[in-house]
Image (tube, rainbow, N blue to C red):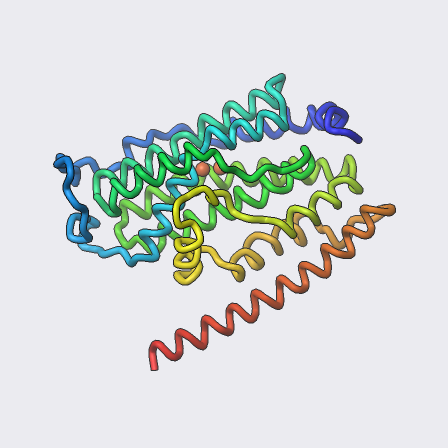
Amino acid sequence: MNDAEILCELTPVIERLLERHLETSKEWFPHEHVPHGRGRDFEAGHQWSEGDADLAGHALTPEVRSALYVNLLTEDNLPYYFRTVESLFGADGAWGTWVRRWTAEEGRHSMVIYGYLAATQAIDLVELERGRMAQVSLGETPNPESLADGFIYLALQELATRISHRNTGLQIGDPVGYDVMKRVCADENLHQLFYRDLAAAAIQADPNRMMVSMERQVKSFAMPGTGIPNFDFHSKRIAKAGIYDLQIHHEQILAPVVLRQWEADKISGLSGDGAAAQERLMKRMATSERVAKRYAEKRAAANELQHA
Ligand SMILES: [Fe+2]
Ligand SMILES: [Fe+2]
């Protein structure tokens, strides 16, 4: 099947998923989650320092500050995600309705996180704004090469984002900050369920093509945000804090979705390219499991050393 045929075949599926999404998603307001009472006027040219932050008595580690910076900037790059998804799904019918609705929901994620950071001065807002300008001016985003690749990437990425936001929230300490990230997570969860089930329907419709895409996307998966200044530096800190790392990626993203939901190892009736991709994918999953285990052991050893 080509992209146009998949879009046509899956139209009843996206109509159903859209209806389910609209029934389950709840209206919410970013401004209601922002602790405005902690806000202060800003003085131009003021050099931010940790002491400016008001986190209700809590202090953020540099790792959590990196996570907030990267998570918010990733949300800020929405214009380009919209461009990518609309170019894959099209603007017509339920496909277009979904893309626009999803975009509208994504837009409030940066609003609420920014509102929280501006009110609490949890991180350096000058550095944040310079980072936003640099990233959005660059317009660098993951670009899945086909509709089938897009289904897979979006399902994995929404789940990865949800987990990264949740773990960031858990480490903020300030209950209001936790609530902000939890609210965003609830949206991301519905998004990942949507894309996960859409991909599952596509697997049924065209298992060969989806298997080739699945293998390719699992192999090349990277979080968006590569256009963020010092992305690698911040990613390392985020991994060090256990907010998002290779172990989490395997245990909480790849294994639950690829193996348990899509049951990639059980997809039968594949021919040629599809069967070869399935074999490579299963080998890759086994390697990824080993890497995750090694990562966990290394972390445990480092923790022991730290507490010895
Ligand atoms: Fe988001
Ligand atoms: Fe999302």
